[in-house]
Length: 146
Image (cartoon, rainbow, N blue to C red):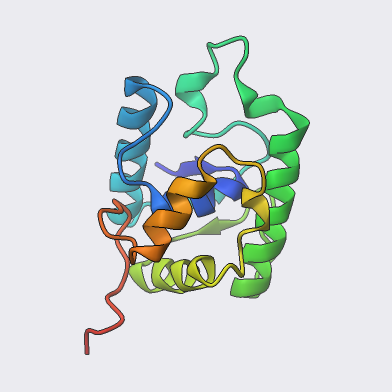
């Protein structure tokens, strides 16, 4: 199987600690993080993805809003510059612990945060990053390990 992610969810996964919009959303995102930790491949998609799935039955779900599409474009640009890859529909990648650590370092340094503007979760994610991503479910390579 493959985990389908929209570009800005690459950033959301970095700080995910088991909080979310609803119990179904939390269960789904926790399972996605588990799958990514197990080495499952990620494919970048345009529009709603596997993380959005539990929200799509809500007629007010923000997954289709233009602001979310702008968030995706900003994340694709920032993460693409960091990784020297074109983050676009159809790109397949594995979020290895080393790659997650690289993305977290850039996130903590504000290098990949333009997608987070006006996000309801931005303050929580900033706090998690400032605390060294303690409690985050997605695994990263410990930079102190030799």
